[in-house]
Image 1 (cartoon, rainbow, N blue to C red):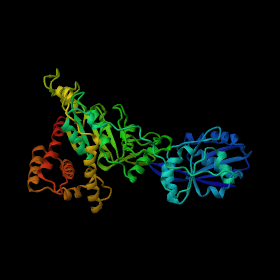
Image 2: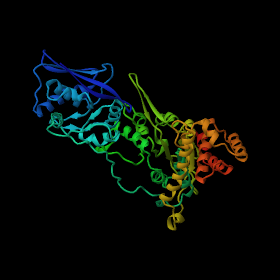
Image 3: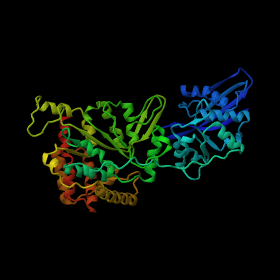
Image 4: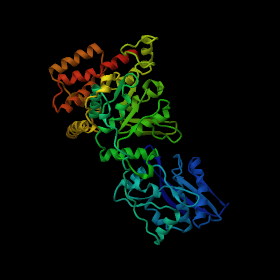
Length: 510
């Protein structure tokens, strides 16, 4: 007799259907798992046998063969434990096989028969809902899976005995409820930063248009503080963005207790991060920091201290909004539409250009340090600002600073203007000016005569690339949206170009 249970394999955030076939037949006593399993799947037989024994069921004195179809698709992870166990129970008559046909199953078994949470419950639920099936998942992953839709039938048992009793009618499992992780507290406020009014303005522009930003300044100028306060002025997540973020976090095992977070991601990896940690990879091709920051902020502090290979691996995600990981046996794509915020010192000693300071190594210290960042990467950063050291007057008698709530209101208004514009024009995937298509930005950010003359002159003198030209237009369009202007003027282009000038100095050093 052959029993069948449906489960999934993960390729990126996509759940690929997998058919678990269990056959109990005369032969040498034992269990064999075939179908290209990895080490975690091969060890399932020990966990399944112990869990069945703890649940009051014994392994049959026959040969048990488990086939994971399609056989040429690599099977990775421990979530195959539960479908294998339920397939074996169906073959033994402990649970009705026809009832299992309506569900997609995933879960890891403990030796005592309890079911422990696994990564990927939300993408699995989305795939099951698309097929018109229900989902059987661990109790700890039930809240996460419930976000896939109200119509999907979800069973979240705590143990094998609970699910057997449910199908026998002696115990009814309640559908889990979707839950949001409670906010840990108030976000850091911009009012905490003393001085740095120009940097706060650049941060507001970056938040309004979703632009990338790099800050250059001496230690203690407040670069990290500014970056950490960016989430406090960003608009809340839409339902679509929340689902996209949660699916990536589910694959990465980042959802604690199956609870989703309604805050935009803020990822700040250490400069010792490897390329696999940054863009994703490893044996199971997990999402990296770039993908985990999707629809949020990726903050790279001490930018030149990252290895050049890691920094240059960010070029494709910044340009295309997705991270493609190619391996010999498979190719995985993760969404990675991020807002890059970087901070760096002007030189290794950190004080180049500071009043009254003279570096012992001279200008070479600054040029060598800044040359660690490639010109093509800098070309993809819209806003480049110098953050000077804080003066004593700012510290002793600080002026009243504007709170994040006031800045967030202006950012929300600018984002609403962009959303309305793109909804009317209908471009695929664009929600902010930073991710607007090149052809479209030339239409919506067409400057007046004075602005066009200024842009032409600046492009000739500074040697803008085609990418830099269009990024200046995107920033100018954001500045016009902040002012509530329908037309991009000379003043908007002048400010957008000013944010480009410090970066041109960096590019010359590189």
